[in-house]
Amino acid sequence: MPGTPDAITTVLGFDYGARRIGVAVGNALTGSARALEVITNGTQGPDWTRVAGLVREWRPQVLLVGLPLTMDGEEQKNSAAARAFAVQLKERFNLPANLIDERLSSVEAAQRFAQRRAGGSARRKHAQALDSIAAEVIVEQWLRDNH
Image (tube, rainbow, N blue to C red):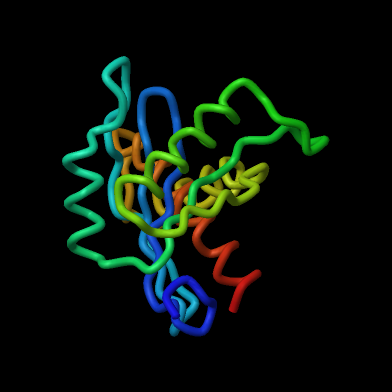
């Protein structure tokens, strides 16, 4: 049955932000995730055409959305918007959309970006990629916790 942990092979994760949404793909069989891209978001909402393209391309069984919480586990300003985005994903694509505590994803993403810069695989001008790296961290966390 789709949506059960054993039936899941591919997940798409989103690091929701008011201006940008980072996207990553994860593979439950290998337990790995990869940052994909950053989608624009704004007053007109997310670039749903691009989101739909990614869903078609990767055919995930589950969608993941990072839920921003304070370090105390309380909701914060952007929490409601991330929750609303998850509901829209579920309704538009008829897939489970799980919220994932993302408290430390930004810190981890910054560390990974710094390592990639030091290794020569990322440049300062690629800093926008931080959002997709944060999505990668969110997906990896879900894979660790659910497989």
